[in-house]
Length: 96
Image (cartoon, rainbow, N blue to C red; front, side):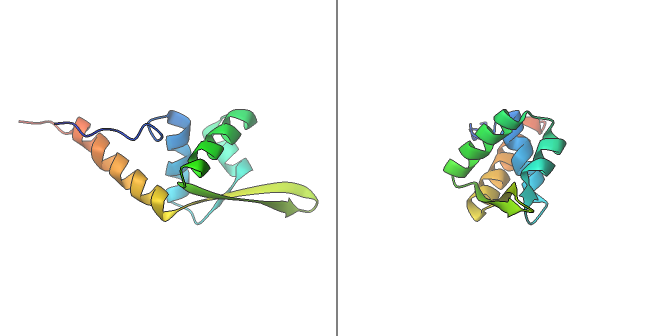
């Protein structure tokens, strides 16, 4: 039987964000913007959804008088990502 997929991560942009964050300590908004190719508004909305689910921590500050947003995956986010990968792998495995 197939496992349910996390609906929060079963969105291309949110999955992209989590996939980028899983491999780094933290990432700035502009890095995520560049790597995902998303618009600023859409990226911001999706980051907020992941934050509300406690999948990521978001820190807002300033660097040289410019706003700086930094994102970091949480243990909850790591667990959700690992479960998602395991679940999606079940769809990809050929059952004999």
